[in-house]
Image (cartoon, rainbow, N blue to C red; front, side, top):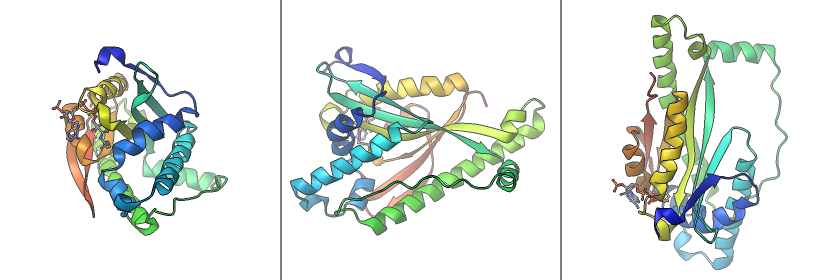
Length: 244
Ligand SMILES: CC(C)(COP(=O)(O)OP(=O)(O)OC[C@H]1O[C@@H](n2cnc3c(N)ncnc32)[C@H](O)[C@@H]1OP(=O)(O)O)[C@@H](O)C(=O)NCCC(=O)NCCS
């Protein structure tokens, strides 16, 4: 299929979660280290169990689509079926002094707890362990970023905003349906994302599955660390702001 017959657009409707999970997100990620760590028996699961995993993904996407700071793109084939999907979030990191000050000032507001469920085939312990490791790696890299910006702050006089509020783009989803991979769809989505990154002069960060490493490298991301999972390596990749 040529790229001419594809269209790329924002995901604006929560109901898109169903087709994106079924046609793109779940089939694309099935062989990745995260999925195989979370679902270690994925080779032997039944159709009913697979359907449950898909429904879980639909629920997660529906929640994500309602997050204020998240943005999503989908690539559609001519018949309207989604073949590509990506998401990112713009994260603000405030300097520690500001965070501490705000904690003193404002009592912590508890978010209303949602009813959650997990598929019976999910290895919950493995899921928690890998999530913690990934979060720790992300924090490690972004702490360095804070330090870089603090240092920059000493040599610039107008970077008040940099000192207190620094934003970066975190890639959260990137998937192309297996039948449409290696036809430039991932690159098409990355071009859009990088245009936005460069427009605002932001840094960007991604925890990349093995299949994504080459794609991200092509768009200027560099490996800065890694997390080992029982099923393969997740590479921590950072893209420097073009304005820094
Ligand atoms: C990673 C992914 C989104 C790439 O999408 P795509 O549409 O195939 O990407 P493109 O066709 O634009 O190719 C971009 C680059 O990625 C490389 N690439 C694509 N699929 C790859 C794969 N399976 N393994 C290794 N590299 C791959 C291509 O070789 C290409 O580099 P090149 O131009 O130097 O040859 C797609 O393979 C995918 O959905 N994989 C499963 C989910 C996943 O791992 N997502 C990344 C999560 S962080």
